[in-house]
Length: 106
Image (cartoon, rainbow, N blue to C red; front, side):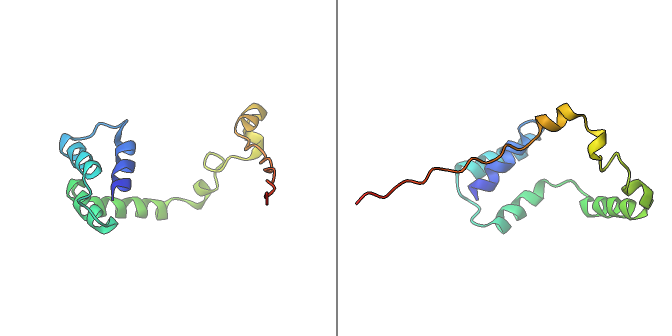
């Protein structure tokens, strides 16, 4: 599960991370001690903040109690008119150029 450890390492690079968690990630990268995602998640759960399920439940309840009008707000879903043309061009996905086919010799 080295890939998961490397991904976690990249995600935590810009955050203030407790030393034991950094050590856990370093060990998970250097030696394949967790053979499955489940084992890795179980070992990682040790570093989880207490009360996480309750916190997630409260966020879910706040979302459900939010007025419908707020969900349709232009702040959350900007229309094309609210985005300047320069910004639209900056984030435009380039068109894919077709590859040239190679001829088989022989």
